[in-house]
Image (tube, rainbow over all chains, first blue to last red; front, side, top):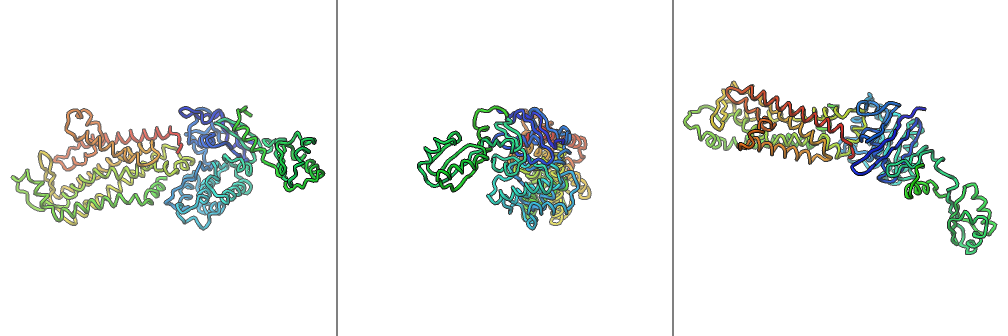
Length: 307
Length: 275
């Protein structure tokens, strides 16, 4: 399958630093492609280069196998994007903002389509209000309506949950999943929060200080042997020496009278649970921790070897 | 896109402040002249008492000329308020990012914004013509117009005035277009509109000083400054009208417009959008 967008050896050098260095990746139809990195890792700079907002120092961007540059900006009809905040014309209504950007999309957009996208993002009934009266979540949703009004095949969403309250984050997550599953959109979504990306992405790219650290499906990046499991049980002082003398000792990360942390494959957990019950320990809770988070931290906090 | 740009400009309350300012200043001058015009006229004609000037000297044409002289110094600021905001204001609001993710070329964005700023400037000039000329003629009536210069005065018959005003307003529109082009250029480099607005005014004030100060040191650069040529409209009230000088001034202003807009397109196309 041909990629919708492809970055080839993108590098952006600002005065003293390489914001992005030799970054290559491609996004294929149907992907929800997570772009992960801490603040300042180079995510926004990369997305801006994909859209022609920032000129790469070297490297190139291909959209539908065609080299993208200032002379063929019509390729952007295939893309809808929100970069950082969805800043809009506050003195215009939501409808006027949507109509304004729809008219710039390079396609004829009928009024019916505007109504349709407002419905998809859940803004029906508020479209006549001025945008200055919108909450941050409503602005984000209007931004997504603007990005998708011309029915692009790829949506580029830069940190779309930034500034939202927990309910807004959950709604945004649902919207992104719906855009992918129900509306067939390919999505590039960035975040510095692994949890957010993990919830929606089918593939992801992790960058650190402008360099690619890892790329793959969530399952590929999630090494089962790295799973940390936390087991909470009734207070029992004898557990500490007992487990240290058992066959499970090699898996133990830490152990206290009330809590045990082990690093093992999920398939081994029932065996450990059975052993605890045989020791007459009352187990209250078994919880797997996100091993991907550890992986992400190991990539972005330790000295690195490129994946 | 041009229509959309105009829609944005005329949906903003600040746009109408300029029209209000022009109306206020014109009315202020007209009311002051209504009550104290004869004193002003006496002061103005002090050097030419030997001539017997009769008829309605304090007429609408003269008042309009006074208003034009006063307001054409301030109108560049009003033009810069909108043109200086064209790119920098979008950058400040954050909408420039969204605008540039659309399939529109950067040169086209500059040209459309310039065209919209010119349209707004033309509206200001037309408004100035309406409130200056129409109201003055209503209040003071028609009459032969006296154009008093430093070393002479020109008497223009009342039937010979209107075409001169039409031409003068047309030239003023060209001068304001030059100001709009300068503001657009400065707007490309800024992320908020205060810089380009103040920058435009600063450049015009400094260059106007160079253009008008009678010091020999500035004589060599005067002919090349656009501010020297912005007051070319006054030529239409001379007798005979110096068409060659007016044409040269218009040509130089047009050259500056091409230079400013060409530079704006060049630098905007090269710019990394980080706002």
